[in-house]
Length: 309
Ligand code: GLN
Image: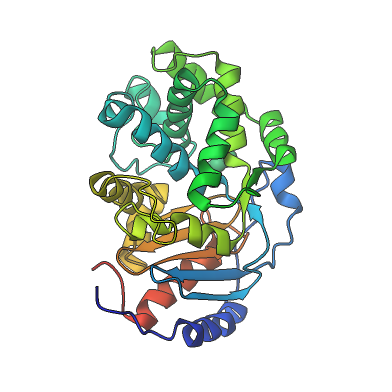
């Protein structure tokens, strides 16, 4: 591997300036009441390279709700447990629809397009409920093992807040149950899903956690094989094509990296062989992705002239 000597800190200092000048027309997610309480001006970035150089600016050490970014972690665990059989119950095609859209799900008889839209992640949770004795605890232990950090936790206030307003997710799971694609009790599966979404991390922890996807499935610090090389390739591929819902093409076009967003305003992106970068800015664009986060990542890959393309 050719050593990467890019001075990311210098680029980040530019980015921090750039970020202040962006007129952030996004809005904080309000459909989960607890997420609305966040200070919308928060902004942080952190990058960890595969040879453990770390660069950060802004609120990069402050924890936030990682929301759908965690769908990558539940998918990784499900693939480890059931392998390719998972794809009989969820697809790998971009949806081209919002993360919580019901339209395709009815037309396609309860088989979600991919594991990163809500319906797909709910099926993944159903798989975990079928296979694990204590799914909530075992999922958390799995995440702590990957991050090598025992302090990573659910935010039960956020999970409860989501449960109270879960009308659309409840519609998704009922539709899939009617089509035979949910095997377990609906409330048990949703309980796991809401907790999954409520996991909290800061940008530093996110960059460290997902670094295995930049290193062919191996955590370069602990040397633990999280996934096979092939499975790691596939997760990156799904992130590239489905990580941003009906904005996946736009993210690919402008940023050029596999990535995943969450309605907490976080985004992670992977440069295979080099680094994982995490950005946090809570105001979202109309597609539910961080407005400023997308712009900053576009600036970053343009400025460093480094993407997967
Ligand atoms: N918890 C959120 C939901 O189910 C996750 C959505 C997201 O981050 N895009 O609606």
